[in-house]
Image (cartoon, rainbow, N blue to C red; front, side, top):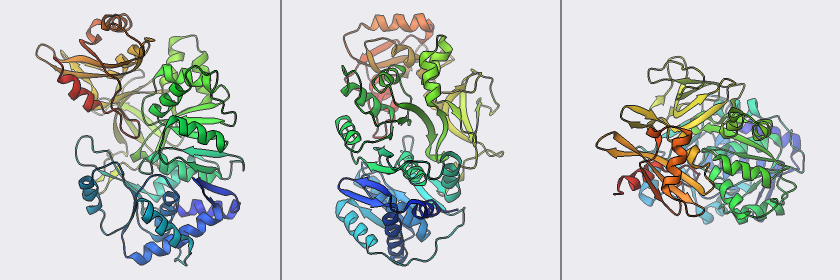
Length: 483
């Protein structure tokens, strides 16, 4: 197994089809294959041990991803939003590396790649490292998640049908190269034969304009992106994207009001919620378009609640919810999500696999499974609020607050409290003025008094990172400082 196998099959099956559109640049599958060959020769001749990319989305992403597989070295996309010192620290961990950094390096690299080369055959050892992705490092120094060729190829073969896309199909990729979704979108689109349209820097107006111009049929966004797109379309009857057949989202919890508004604005579009992690080579569970429609039309609260679930596990993946002692819990009970399957790596460079003895990966995500096997996310395991010995999920309180029509966004955290150990606090982004007591009354009505936020503050926006994940630690520090 080698990711180059996926591009070789595409090249042989539909080499003249356009594979990539990035600004004014276009590559056919044949041209992408030739560029990977040229770049593979360049990487081998460089004497480097890693191929590192520090850039926005561009043709350098697929070329370098496949070329590194051809050259037999890990591909390492880096977060261009980090400080100089942070990047230097990461680069020191992958030396010697062939680094492509910024526009000038990119153009030089692509020019030399297009000049061609005659690299040796790529290796087919499934245990070789294909990609190293550094985690965000929210609780310490970033860890380098190891994705071997067997993990990525297993994910693609198990979830994508070869050559299934029509020549008119195009997928809009707006997540950055260092996000697992950017890697997965590249591999899956190429294997399916779907044209990739890159948006280097996301903004909702630019996303809509590019989707219309390129007649995009498929797209992936994180929840904050979809929320901003929906906000831009406020007051419109529809999104006016008749070509858009499928819109997938993931990378964070989707507020129910946002997805309900989006489904009305995109009435002809199939929505899919895809949940996965870097350590699992992307998606492990999916809420299908049929699930979305059934939940939206459901009459029972349990049916409608599934609209904010992440669906059911892929057939190739097992999911269990376990308690603090590692024992499986019954349906409906909260615990830590564990996953197992061929695509699951759960390995970090220099640390080895973080798997249990029986091959399960503890994700550190909290969640629950309902009676029908639908998976619900409830934040990170360490986000639990412990008030007077009672464990509370911030997610369930946030879901209730978001039911109020005046609440656009919210985050619930635990803050120090002398009497209870922790108190419930909420940061709220409001669409219109609303009294804190009205929000407290709603939580008390839906849940119980112990879950009512003791402290509610209003903010213009909440802190998210560039891939749409709420920076809950920043919210906690902010609210802990409030009088």
